[in-house]
Length: 428
Image (cartoon, rainbow, N blue to C red; front, top):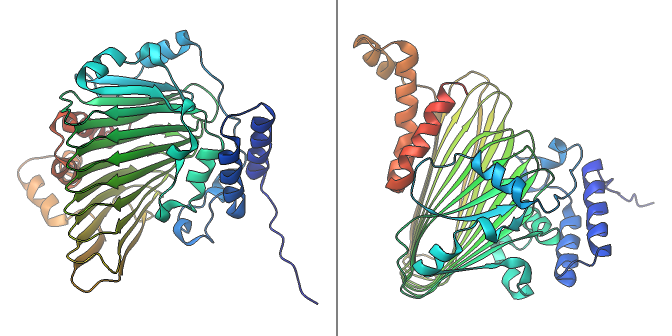
């Protein structure tokens, strides 16, 4: 007799299945694409610890149920929510507003963006070709679920040679209900763009995907701020493709989230390109935050750098998973990653999982991971100079995190991010 193992769906997975069936019955667009994506999601269900890439971040165990998708919000409600949001203070920037997963054109700076060389359109009208996943992310359940339950989002196209001087902020607001937004950013040859993504609003599940196509000789500098999202799960995915002689520099900033995963999939598609990926994570109490990235060196002569910092207090858990893949023909690859964690309590936990998969022989690749507590000698040095212990600890933690923020080098947002670090350290 052969035993058959039957996986029983959780309440959250049952909720998601019912929500997808309701979406189909309502005449959703891109139905073939959605159906294929949902079947891919159902093959594993919600990510769980038996999936190697999710072994430290068990969403299946965390999500007891799953809130229904958000409906479109009124313009008045979005305007009020936007007025209450303080993401980057007085920073001069152009804004694109997405609320409950949908582009809000009336509250976005479309005219200013157009003048700067950026065309903005609604992704809800796009064809299925814009939703193709790279090989390294094809089976990712979070990406599949976003595609299946997609509500909308925006496409930003930066014209060839345009140098957008002001930062562009894409602010995603949640006003109730789960959100599934998609952002597509296309930089034509020689374009330059500074992009900030921020998330704000009520506590509700977020599953956001950002897809960046950086053409030859283009430059993208991007920061993603995931802050104070509360008890609902937050999943953010970045898909990054680099052409030849392209440059990408990104920072993922996670703070105040009970359950968050920020994942990036980077593919080098053209030679002599460079990607520098930075991350800052702060968690306390029983929170969990996961920074995961996969870098695919698919062509020769490219460089990647990953530098991530994590501060953990209480019974919280930080996760870093980084993988560099070097394909057989990707000679002259230079790939390096480092993750460092500062544990502020005896119960704090950090899971580091750096990986190298190298199939070429003429490469330079390395990885490192450290976890430790505040240096007592440095603490004594500061206290000996009259600095109170609490203030001395704050200075050391700020210095630890600021190394990644400053090396990221986006001066226009550094001050705002460091202010958030101070607020977190103050306990709020």
